[in-house]
Amino acid sequence: MKNNDLILIPARSGSKTVSRQNLRLVDDKPLLYYVLNTALQYTSNVFVSTDSEEIKEISTMYGANVVLRPKSLTKDSTPLEDIIYHALSELNKKNMFFNKCLILNPKFPLIKLSTIKKFFSNLNAKTQIISGYVDDANTNYGIIESKNNHLVKLINTESHIVVQQKTIAFVCNSFLKQKKFQTPVFGLKFTDYEPLSLDNYHHFGILEKIIKRRRILVRVDGSRKIGLGHVYNMLTILNHLRNDEILILMNSKYNLGSTRFKDHLFSVKYFSSESELFRILKNFKPDIIFNDILDTSSDYVKKLKQLNLFVVNFEDLGSGRNYADLVFNPIYDDDKKHKNEFYGANYACVRDEFRIWKNKPISKTVQCVLITFGGSDPTDKTYQILKLIREINLKDIRFLIVLGLGYTHKRRLQILISQMLSEGFRISLIEKSDFLVKHMREADFAITSNGRTVFEIASLKVPVVAISVNNREKNHKFVKNTNVGFQLDFHLKIEKHKLINSITAMLDFTTRKSFVKNLQKINLLNGADRVIQTIMSEYEKNKQSCSNP
Image (cartoon, rainbow, N blue to C red; front, side, top):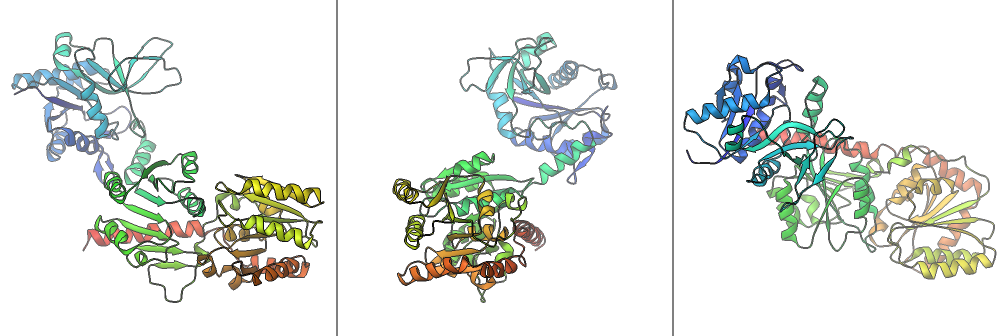
């Protein structure tokens, strides 16, 4: 038999930690299955060294080969080198010779195919032994020169310890001559969940959660024109998903807010064409895709469905919503909605911090007014509102202006604020705040855009003057339908007088008290949970129907 790569898996019947460890079921499959399945994706030369008849049969059933191990090599104290030497010798007797070998342990079932490939590709005449490792608090190692910089030189002393995970690759001929591993040993670092070691029953529960986790791809856009509402909406929802593998995918032209995802430790990729988008999709192989990109086209969603994806769209009034599995439109109302569409405030996803902080008691006199128009405020309503405040001469009230990440008119605004401060107005400017809830709860009422921010302000029981800054926001009827403030369209000059009247009305305690009373009837804090429960419930139903046509 010509030289090639061998994967050897020691799997005895006994265990000093968990009874029947290698055969214990995880998601209805024996633990041994997981490392076998990954190994067989690399090569058909997978051999299990075992003393167990049951393990032998299971290994054969899944497509592996078996080397029967004598009982003398099944003790807890048996060196790994002795088990390896026995297996290689038995294979040599059958005229099976291998150049390189990788030892995999079923106790570490999450090793990736890409890691297996790295072990073999890095073995050569100079690097004859490579051990898997994880960083330890006392680890000390020196980086060596290599083509791909994957490897480090492992130092084993009493004071400098590297955790070696019984996953080791080596050149077979050298090992057979020495019958043990020689130094130097080089290390290949495990990634992600690969080092998970099953040392007790609780670890089996953790493993099952990892195996069952879903892969979710999130298509989301953010820009100065679009704003950051989509970014914050997705962050809120994703923070409620504790056990899923998430990939954020953003158009390279509309990637404002990508740092927010990275700050929350999500992986982010960018694309510049539809072909690149679908290439990333196919490589990631998601189970579910979230689209928070405004209106989708029917062609786009149909392509997603052809990949057997469960498609969930947010704030989508486009033709693609007719082909999605679920659509959440909390901002809108529609009497002609499809059965897969969910409209209204019950599905609004306010950020987690709004669950912590409560509103302050209503004040008889207005002390503070919040002005905020989202992440970018492309039409600079902030500046226009402030000019109007100057015109009606409201100097006894503190105006708190919160600017978003994408605001680009700051110089002009600062000049106006400086002028108004010199005239006796009370204005505070807050830029790019991560503690927006603090400023919202200080306000007696807020002047804001008629988008998702309305829900967050309303969750704190603060009345709003909501201004629709584009035609899309005109369809947001929450403020009007629930009577928790005034809803205006600022496109027409006549709306200027309505805005003045609305602000004047908000100064009246009776008016604000009535709005607050209506706000107290509304619970906006459970929307994200409701959205997640709906998605996962429908996903599981869809999964079952596909498996049982």
